[in-house]
Length: 76
Image (tube, rainbow, N blue to C red):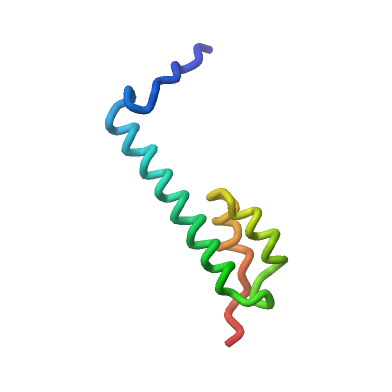
């Protein structure tokens, strides 16, 4: 099976560049939202330790996991 050639970013089609930029922006948005929530949420409203979730939220997949399963319902 032939491997696809690796082109520099500026040699890719405009559609592929747009998709790449959109995925990067989405990823950064998810990580930022998760980190901001960890910072503002009290530890008793989280499943697990803040340090563990901070480490897991360094990428978008960890951030999605935190936003889905890492928070407890607001107890207020």
